[in-house]
Length: 325
Image: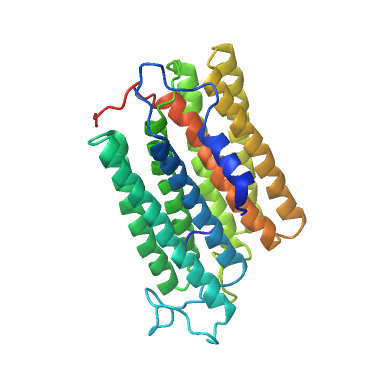
């Protein structure tokens, strides 16, 4: 079992580029430009970590969470599901998601090797090392989730662990691309910090909504037992709080003349509005599986866009790659 989580192709990748790149923010002329391979690998690490959330979501909404009821084997004897097995196509869906873990691991290891070659002893390399550790740990957490028969809290932890991996991947991308942006003033830093906190709470409460609703991953999986309407209202309140903070930040960044940060706030606002529309559509249409998967993609993009704002405002990087802690 891998993280809950729609669509591949150029559109999704283009959106990922938007939420991880602020147009006016480019490295200053005296900064050594990172290799194209390194930049692409840093972006790929983000893409694959989003992709496995989406494929995990497909596992959940198709009821395939226990398609392979054992871990690390599929059925207790075989790693690969047997054709014609009792779980049928559900085993193929779950096993395909498990294979995605190796794709993620391959990309982050390649990123680490490239960083070790081109930026040895840099902060980016160290963060990439933690990314490898996190992916391995996430695989183990997925196994625990299966062994506990998709307990709602372990499923929630599995998703939130993926969001933590996106934090690390976004940091590596930030350190590799080294966007040039003036240091944010105290007011903007407070707004960005509050926005990150609100965004994190949106994700946490969102997992409680999921744990209390349908699409548990398997028809026999119990739900958390919270009142879904109450939890959904708290979730919606937090979403609107993040939208309000985004608008305030966008206005403040424009008035301060911080074009790259204003651009990041603008991208986040666009993602929030689209994600909100998907969320309300889910509610009105009775939570159809396709919209659930799309909403998980939107959650990843929302988190990445919020991280972009936070990184630009709170963690400016030097013009040249450094080996600092």
